[in-house]
Length: 228
Image (cartoon, rainbow, N blue to C red; front, top):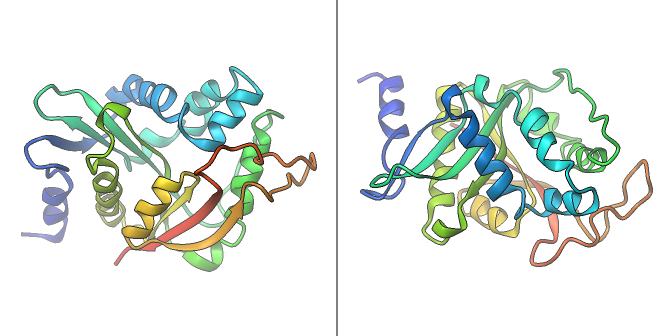
């Protein structure tokens, strides 16, 4: 069996045997991706939910039309689904990047502070990933009805096989949730940079943009894992 065939076999194994399956995100899943992103990721992700609270109605269109725009074409995303019902219960979206590629600015003044924070945590990324193509976890979420079953840990582990299949040297994650930070650490990610929400000052507005994020979330971390 070739290495490629072996990866394919492992990629589509059940995340939880007999209960939760795994498949690739395709162009037919666009509406499903948007639903999981807007109705399950947005309300619970610390920075996005804060931005939505400050500027109602802005985050949804940004996530739908800008942030996830190239996700499907990169073919680096997975869906977790209930094997019996077929219901999609979780998603992990990956984007492929290379250091030095064009990085379009975020022009919306209400969204820009979030983008600048993510730029700040990625400022030294070239020193960690070199010239390799790398996979960035754009977002991941599991429906609240299916939390605490190990689905997030399993799908974050499984994305490593996607990275390997696509010849990525690293997987990176801008982790803002304490829970994903703990999961990523458990999976062997190294924390390369950390910015505490209570201390971060936006470089343009001078505002303590993230000071009101509710605990237990307290920082954004750039977390990286080398793919062998």
